[in-house]
Image (cartoon, rainbow, N blue to C red; front, top):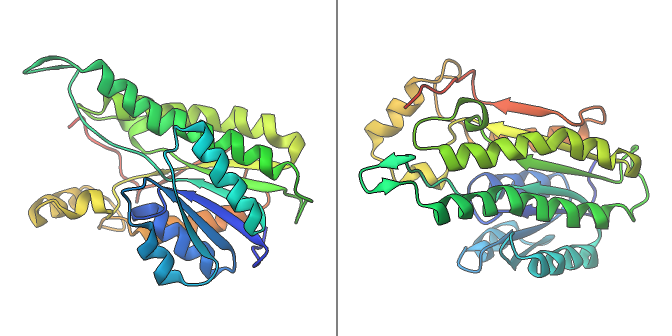
Length: 254
């Protein structure tokens, strides 16, 4: 599906990192981008950078009413054709650490944001897309973000890996379920990307992370994630698929 100025792309986690990079890419293709992120996020800075055809809606992806409001605002700006789920957290903890068993509330919060939040946006975006007239055979495209941790989870990533594994497992049934509505569902599983989460690490740590990546021998550029989102939106035959974007990286145990 080729994007136009009448099309809207809703991007969660759109104020920074992979989400902001995706917003820039889809905006460059002509779409109106609506950034959904926490009230504390600086979504306004990205909107100011992009100028016209960009807006920011503060919301928590786990809040059904807030996301429904954001979807409604997207529809006010045009036809909601694309939803990209980039919002997520990556807190780490061992199952048995120095202070005892893994905190249950922490586990539940990671699952709530990364998995339940993704589903919340998916279901509400799909409901809006179902009213669209097909363009190039599609009423809409939903792109979710998993992680290679869904397959190669490291020590300390029990909650994160479980949440991203859930996103991976949702992909095919969601695509099959929404096929009759002509809505495609795809998931990207990124490797180690140069996002704000890694920006605060010492340079030697960043270099060590990059050293494990076979080729290209560097951290991923968020713009490369945004590029893949655009390519998946444009490619009419990719559906129900999980695409690893990791430079052939396979994570070690720790």
